[in-house]
Image (tube, rainbow, N blue to C red; front, side):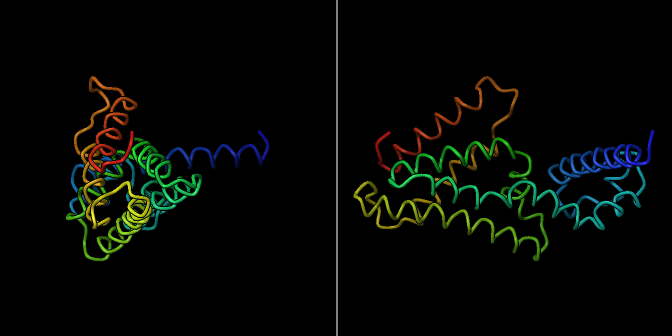
Length: 203
C-alpha cells in the first residue's frame, strides 16, 4: 500500500471515529442534558480515551457546536430557502410547513435537544439557542403577515399565530417515535392539515 493510500485509509478511520463520537454524544446529551453529560461519560460509552475526544473536537463545547452545526443551526436558512422558492404566500406557508416537518424528522434527536431541553443549557448556550429560535419564528411571522395582508389570516397578531403553529410542530418532536404505527409522511400530512385549518387558510 503506497503512502497516499495509507493516508486515505487513516483519514477514513478518523472520520468513522469522529462520526461515532458525534452519535454517542448526541444520545447522551438527549438523555442527560448538556450539563449532565461529561467528556468522561462520552469516552466511557465508546470505550475510548478522553484525549481522543479532545483530538477531534477540542472540548465538550466543540462536540456540542459540531452537533448543532450539522443539524438545527441549518434550520433558519433552510426555511428561508423554502419560502424563497414560492411567490404566493399561501404556497409559501404550505411549503414552509412541509420542509420544517421534514427537517424535524431528519434531525429529530438534535431538535429535541435544542428546542425541548433548552432549560438544561447554561446561559451562553441557551442564548445561542434562543437566537436560532428567534430566527425560525421570524420566518413564520413574515409569511403569516403576508397571509394576513391577503385576507387569509383573520388574527391581528401574526406572532401569536406563529407561536401556535410552532407549538404544534414541537408536538411532533416531543411525541413522535419511529417505531409507531403512523409513517412520517402520514404524520406530516395530518399536522399540516391541522395547522392550515387552525390558521384558517385553504387546504
